[in-house]
Figure 1 (cartoon, one colour):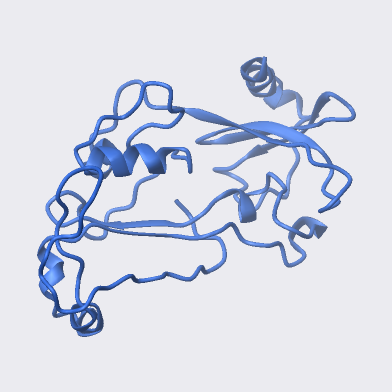
Figure 2 (tube, rainbow, N blue to C red; figure 1 turned 90 degrees about the vertical axis):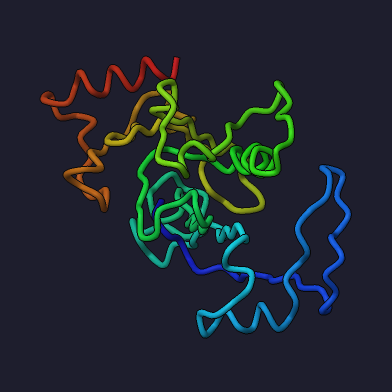
Length: 212
């Protein structure tokens, strides 16, 4: 998971009461007091032994990269969002995971962490196994992206594509043919378009097949 622009983190705290907060999922641990939250700045907090912490943000806006604006293009600068997790006894401090995860996974993850049942019709998957370093054998190896709102309000041309751990194929919705192919390992800044490169024709064809 790579960071986009910085986001704001909002901390909700109770008074010094130790009465558990009510929850539709059952009893929850007491919310941290204002004093506990403040003390985390010095690394000394009573909530450290029990708190699950997650920090994420919105995607980043372009500042001229690729000559673009806004944040709805499929390029890496705004396609990714940061995801930082601290879960004592589950996540390993300092670990970095490169599995493909989605915003769709957040709700399922929260339900799983709370011990609640995940409805079968939800589209995402729990990230708890990923946090534990136990990638499921059937975990996703690619994902589909589609932006179609045009011309207003953002003036971003309609396009879609498929992204794997290494390659990205982009299709201009007007042309209906692949227009860009990037090797994210060799070219992480996506400066070299390989769509017309004969050496990568098979890669492009496989990615196009994944789009259907």
